[in-house]
Image: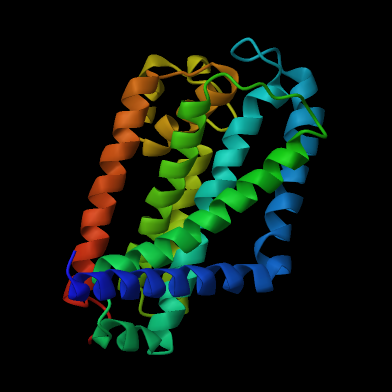
Amino acid sequence: MSQYESVFAASNRVALTTIVVKEIRRFTRIWVQTLLPPAITMTLYFVIFGNLVGRSITDMGGFTYMQFIVPGLIMMAVITNSYANVVSSFFGAKFQRSIEEMLVAPVPHATILAGFVLGGVARGLLVAVIVTLVSLFFTQLSLHNVFVMVYSVLITAILFSLGGFINAVFAKTFDDVSLVPTFILTPLTYLGGVFYSMDVLSPFWQNLSLLNPIVYMVNAFRYGVLGHSDVNVFVSLVVMTVFTVAAYAVAYTLLKRGTGMRE
């Protein structure tokens, strides 16, 4: 490696570290708004759906209803928080015009994108840990497949961080930031098998559910934790990977072109 390449690589590491640290400090500084609400919300889900409603529901997939919904609720928290962190952070950078300084700096676009995405992943994984710890007060969890569990939660956090980035690129007002989570993300999440097994659906709705990518994420993670999945686990991992690669390609292209940032 030449001296120039060594200096360039070192500057990239500094730039990436700076962006990631800034993103982590951003959501940890306001932890009352970013980390506490998911814990409270999930506690309510555990109490209402798991304890109160779950008592009248028979075992699902060979597990108690509480055990069945915990993996789905963890993934729900990962999805919403990874997405929310990047969409709010990048749109804020656009709104304050600070993103223009990054674009004219000698920093590769891939480094900028990775910095924001890793910030979203950090928040998503931290919230996942918090929700998991809360769930242990209500039920016992097993560990069936470590690789599937870790890969599914990590790739999901990356995917929705990229999704938040794409949303922020096209958003022109603060209202645009909430449109996708409200009208697309929330319905897909609730219809993604978080609270029910696909076996309880009719064949038509089972087939229709397969068009929902969140179904594959929830079931892959549930398989990693409980060993139960309504869809083929290998197919789930492939679908998640393909969606993530496609989302990265779109996000990188938008950033490189300066879409929504140089207008």
